[in-house]
Length: 262
Ligand SMILES: NC(=O)C1=CN([C@@H]2O[C@H](COP(=O)(O)OP(=O)(O)OC[C@H]3O[C@@H](n4cnc5c(N)ncnc54)[C@H](O)[C@@H]3O)[C@@H](O)[C@H]2O)C=CC1
Ligand SMILES: C[C@H](O)[C@@H]1OC(=O)[C@H](O)[C@@H]1O
Image (cartoon, rainbow, N blue to C red; front, side, top):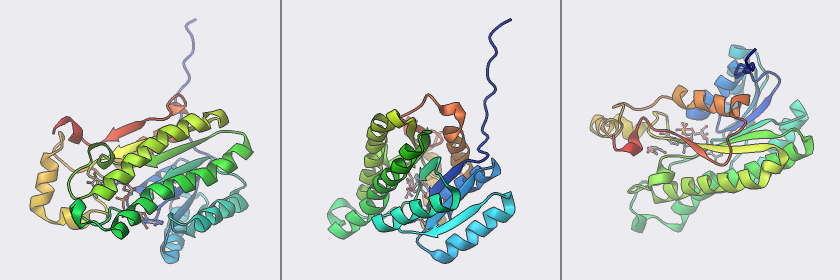
């Protein structure tokens, strides 16, 4: 008899995930997709009403426990409180998705200020470091490993005009992902990233509202269209499942062929 091959499973039953910035856009799609697969989810954003409302919706729609906790991803005290409240409510953390992010001021480098630069770095890069560090301290105590996915961007690979702080923050996230994977493999924790291209969300709705710009962006992709949030959430689900147990310290590019020249 030939060797039996294990059937891949995306089941997240009884797992507990934190999805930062889980009230909107890509984060909301990820939190909802995890919930569809049985995962209890903690979602964060800075607005308490949004957290409460969306957590209730996810709970009603998918029958899992969902907790909304207001927290600023650039604030260490807030982050430590999210980790403590998650452990208090669920007893453990299995998965962290570092998703909360802002695009920042669209302007040339010379027009960026210390404030506009640091605001993006604090949310996108410092937040990723602080959240992962706080969660890993808990995962290490649990002794059963864990999965972290950082939401980076094509912007972190190619830079791009007028979005220097954003590109730099996402390049930093990709570098952090490698170091985290190296240093935390000893705890059985894998750390990976995804680099989405153009995905329609609130982050960029103003830009894509202009039909000319939208058409230009679509033309930059090989598939000639913008992405949707489900096209990021599905791959992230696979990445936190048992299927991706041998992947760590790297990223998946989800850009419709933007970086191969369109
Ligand atoms: N939409 C796109 O085309 C792409 C987005 N991304 C990344 O995906 C992630 C999600 O972006 P979208 O869903 O598009 O944006 P969005 O604006 O729709 O949602 C962002 C979420 O992050 C939260 N957030 C922002 N700043 C926060 C802070 N300081 N503390 C806590 N929560 C905060 C917001 O409340 C919201 O829930 C971001 O990291 C973004 O950089 C990456 C590549 C492409
Ligand atoms: C903010 C941009 O419109 C959006 O964000 C990203 O990371 C994508 O690459 C898009 O450019």
